[in-house]
Amino acid sequence: MSRAERPGPRPVPERVLLVRLSAIGDVIFASPLAAAFRRAYPHAYLAWLAEPGCAPLLRHHPDLDAVIEWPGPTLRRLWRERRLPALAAELRRLRPELRGYRFDLAVDLQGLLKSALPVRLCGAPQRIGLGSREGSRFLLTRVVPREPPAARARIGSEYLHLARTLGLPVADFAMAVHFAAGDASAAEALVAEAGLGRGFFALCPFTTRPQKHWLAPRWAELAARLRADTGLRAVLLGGPDDVDAGADIAAASAGAAVSLAGRTSLLAAAAVIDRSRAVVAVDTGLGHMGIARRRPTLLLFGSTLPYTDTGRADARVLHHPRACSPCRRRPTCDGRFDCMRDITVDEVLAALRALPGAGW
Image (cartoon, rainbow, N blue to C red; front, top):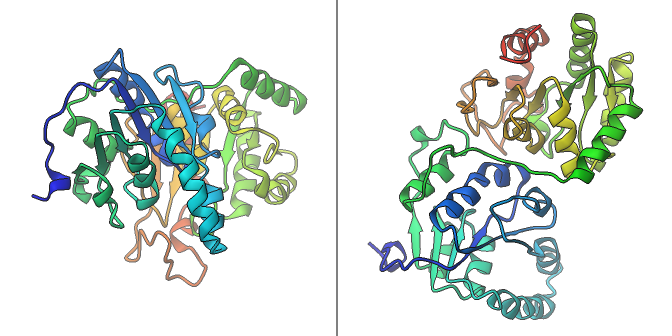
């Protein structure tokens, strides 16, 4: 066993830093650790380090004392532009800022060099990493190996594994996304403006990877058939880059869907999801948010398969495995995305009707 794998003495921490910088879905998966650490160390100062795009997810978490923003986009830009003196200067600025918190335990939940770097910079004497790669183990005092692939069927299983390994309480190890009254008000205003007061379905079709997308015409057909079956329209949720695609799907649905893509903040989108009858999504952060907000949720997976066990009776994964799946970032189907094409509108409707709380 290497030095980075030996636990060594473990004093009770007084100031704890959790580091999961990105992405939205992964931060949601890791969110139960905030409550687990709080229950284990009720009097500790507990902070989470995240990049600006994900920090809002944690801003209102009742178990966190602070959410610290890490300027990852700026650091990556300086690296890409090979502005190494400026990059070094930024890291020198960040080091005393992090050390000012006087953390005595820091935990890298991401397992990459970019996430282990702030763990090392913060100066905590105990520095634990989960499944550390890219040489990040040399910045840590202990590495917790990841669980075997066969044990990863449950949503957020790697974080549950970490919690158990560290001896944290794991009863009710559930994801959580909290938002403020202002986010709820913003969502209510958008829902009222769209004339959706009778109820609606939340559809989340968009991700940053095309191989994770379901076919756009099927989203439009799904919205139309949901309206025919239930009398309720659908809301399309997404970010600023999804505005045009959302408008196209809404137009093709003949009024059965309204697009709010690009019109909500991340937490206002959570509040919209909270008001929905049910959520249908691909492998995207907003879809995982449906489970975290305890809404009936149907997830359509193809090139990725982050989990098959949602941990909830009212949430289900649809996935048709192929010999090439999950291909993740290396599709071999020449852009056909057959695994997503295999999922039919009829199948989605049948699965949605069967979900507790979403049936009709």
